[in-house]
Image 1 (cartoon, rainbow, N blue to C red):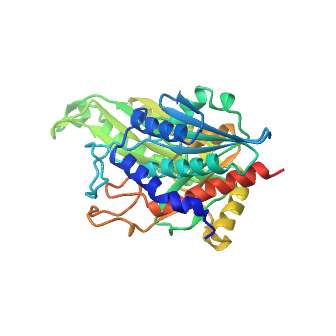
Image 2: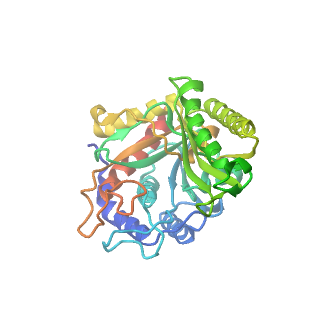
Image 3: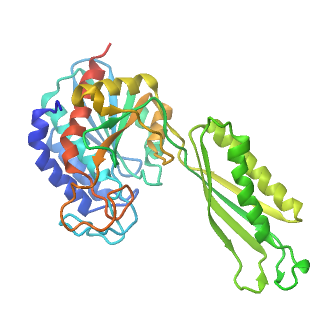
Amino acid sequence: MNLIAPLLAAAPAIAAIRRDLHAHPELCFEEQRTADLVAAKLTEWGIPVHRGMGTTGVVGIIKAGSSDKAIGLRADMDALPMQEFNTFAHASVHAGKMHACGHDGHTAMLLAAAQHLATHRDFGGTVYLIFQPAEEGGGGAREMIKDGLFERFPMQAVFGLHNWPGMEMGQFAVSAGPVMASSNEFKITIRGKGGHAAMPHNALDPVPVAAQMVQAFQTIISRNVKPIEAGVISVTMIHAGEATNVIPDSCELQGTVRTFSIAVLDQIEQRMRTVAEHTAAAHGMSCEFEFARNYPPTINSAPEAEFARGVMAALVGPERVIAQEPTMGAEDFSYMLMEKPGAYVFLGNGDGSHRSMGHGGGPCMLHNPSYDFNDDLIPLGASYWVRLVEAWLAAA
């Protein structure tokens, strides 16, 4: 690996910051302590800071030379509302809150890059360091954009990075096109007529109607969506009834829909509404159909993805830069990529063997109570950020 020597030297100090962040997790739009720490470090390194975008977001600015070119680098800062199982020294001190997705590591890697870029300034142009709140369901990227992120800090491209457990430490993954899915939720309430379970002919039972809907929704994927497209409909909750001898008045279905394109999402939503309403009507019932669109799909622009691939290959060798297999998980960096060209890439977090004795019994996977970020990634991720800045701002 062609890591940057000063980043290797600074890695232990940055790892200490990362572990402090891990021990003090904050949920979406509550990242006040985290933002304070980030702002203090940037200020200490002579980097101008703007605060409060998207509630708790922080933007640092590093300039060098007279070029008008500008690039944005984004790290998320929030934790998850879950209990940590780890018992090592830097485990969460807040019950029910945990950095189980590595946002503490993402913040640390961007801080490491910021310190190096501010000290050396071997580039011409402007770097915007975007420390974003509320990725875990709050849409912090969307809120920063609403607050004028791209108007106040005009950049030509924006890049993001996520650690990826199970992928070999030292590997990168990048691809053009969709790399993460849209995230959407639905709620369907079927209105029937309750009655005695022994006399179903006197009632309108919504439960078998709900069962028909669940089965019919799967034909949308298998018979309506083009086979080469990807889509998921998962009914994850069914609520009905209070007693074994009572037919309920209503039955509620809830779940999620995931797609890699807005066109497929439009198709699925329309077909689900039609199936739900007509199935209910066929049984003499009505239904209320609610569909909430959360995060759009994360789609890398081809030129920026290929540019990132070249930077990665120079760092770790082309054989360690693999194709980015799209995942049906969702990511609100998608909002930024809807506004600006850019690429969202993965960095291998390893198999979990980096964890010290005392970790929990579960695997070191994202959103798992035994997860921990691999601190060995800090100089690698920071080197990627620095080389990306230098190469992108130097390109014609």
